[in-house]
Amino acid sequence: MSIRLLPVLPLLLAAAPAFAADDGGKPLLDLRYRYEHVEQDGIVRDADAHTARLRLGYRSARWHGWSALGEVDGVAHLGGERFNDTRNGRGQYPTVADPDGAELNQALLRYDGARGNVQLGRQRINLGNQRFVGGSGWRQNEQTYDGALAEWTPTAQWKLAYAFVTNINTVFGPDEPATSSATAPANIHGDSHLLQATFAPAEALAITGYHYRLDLENIAVAAAAPRGTLSADTTGLRLQGGRGALGYVLEHARQVDGHGNPWALDSRYWLGEASYAGTRTKGTAGIEVLGAGHGPAANGAFQTPLATKHAFQGWADQFGTTPADGLRDAYAGVALPLAGGKAQAWYHDFRSDRGSYRYGREFDLSWERAIPQLKGLSVLLKAARYRSSDDLRTKDADKLWLQVQYSRM
Image (cartoon, rainbow, N blue to C red; front, side):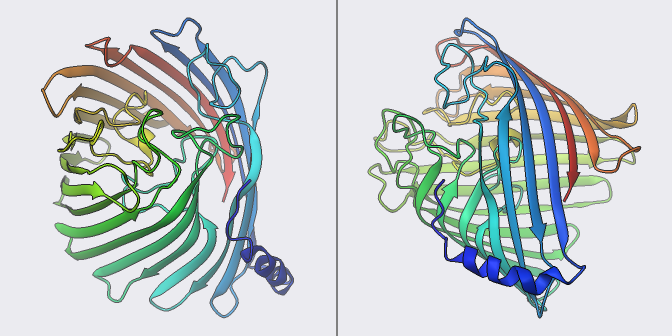
């Protein structure tokens, strides 16, 4: 494993005895089993992945504003490996990106003041709706960040966040691939700066401005591209709010090449969304555009390399990298109570930004329910069906999940 903030660990160990006698500390436990089935055109065999994740940790009591957290996790494959986990060499199967292994998931010191907090070490960083920076919590191995995060709330209307990141522990870890990979490294190196500010004067309006300077030295937009081609500066503005049951989101961002990027980038992001939240049912419709970009770059489209991607552009995960001609996702979904749980249904229509041709369409269904007899236990059934409109660019894919999770965090 690669941990660039090792000096933090002695501080955690030294602090532990001081907190051990305080019953304000809290043990952390999360156990998740998942079955994932994938059928994909162009790959002869279907994937069947049985994986389990165990996460154990401890959050200390707070002492004069200071606290500490340590957390380890491990992912195990149950039964035969009839899937490509990006590390096991099973290329005859579709990808289920859950490599096995154990690592330090979080190790941090935290200080809480009257109007803000600071965290130093390995940690989760989820900014906003995680469209640009998140933890990819859907995968068994969470994405975490080595660095420092400061949050400040000077007034009830203002909130500011700044993070300095020196290393990113991706979902493809903990082990690096047997051969060097520019698209799926276990660790992404480079010094990145993440800045976000939100002003919320009323229920009907919250304004969020952000600037993310990503220095991603050893990762590329594609296997054949030079490393560093995902280093970019992204600046944007998001307007969000609502009145009563109605809500809206409007967002725009511009992305240009960042430090060390051999390509000249200039692309745009647009989002427009409307929603209705009734007493039992919520409906959402919108369009999201990741622009094709301008200039001679082989793929200068708008990219989101640190996003929690599974939550966007369909659960089939067919667009982890934005195609060179960009992507327009017109979507609609509904969430409602069903059989003691929550059901969701979504439809996506995918088209290019440049050329306006159709990639395909996708239908997603899910049902999740907490088990009341045991607090912290939940079950999830989920399915995604992607149908390509152009086999040269994308392929048909079907995915099915069954998940059982117990969490006391």
